[in-house]
Length: 334
Image (cartoon, rainbow, N blue to C red; front, top):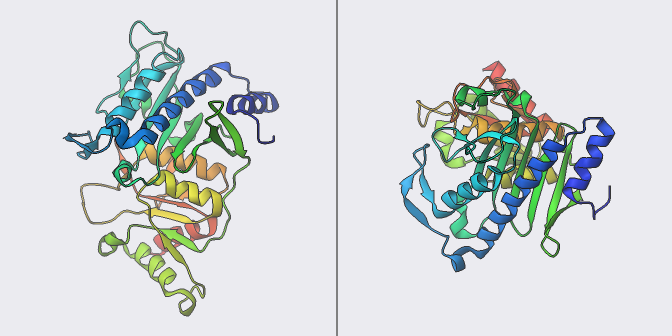
């Protein structure tokens, strides 16, 4: 495939090659991409449209909501509820599942999403994104929370939109990872990054160093070895990165390699981790593994975790295979 191929053209050809033709998924993804285009437009208008700043409200996570958190959540809900392919949706911004309205045609899929990942960055004009995952719902009943609690291995599609210097959509259907850039002149996502793969080795690591005093011993060991550089046991220099937007962090890793860590720590003993399994860890882990990388909590493969709740949190360590496997080995030896 060459640049000039649209997202739907690419996916149609991919389905033909794999013998897994599914027009329902193509129609649903068409609607998802419309959501991302609308969000991209809202973000680009920024302060001109009065969408910047925070609200006097919190989401189910207990986090202060940005205006764009609410706006992007509404965009995703109301654009996709009429796709005709969905039985229900779940969002990081909502406490319970969202049932498809009675006047809309219902389908057999579930859509899980984080409408605006990294929203704390919107006011300072740093890249943010949308993360989404599609699951099956082979029931005639209206979906309940338990229907969404499927391990990451059962995802049919996972993807993210990155709203940066350009708007990109990166997606996997279980046959590798491909990136598409929004051509605003024609209003289509065009294939620009075919067959994205993560280098097995890296000299970059991303972690919130302000939490260092709360890290467990395996992560302390790994980071201290990286910081020691050429004079340390790794005998090479590393660079540290931190954007505070998982989409931006993962995209950098897909493009040039690296390791991203939001590990288990003791900062809040009531939380098993920082990132949400359903809305962040599972979709990103599916993408990373399909690109040849590894994703783990440090103790187990993220995609194998059986979810216990919509808003369950887990530790996340993902990226270049050799570095993630090293961190896993440090956990095993601890």
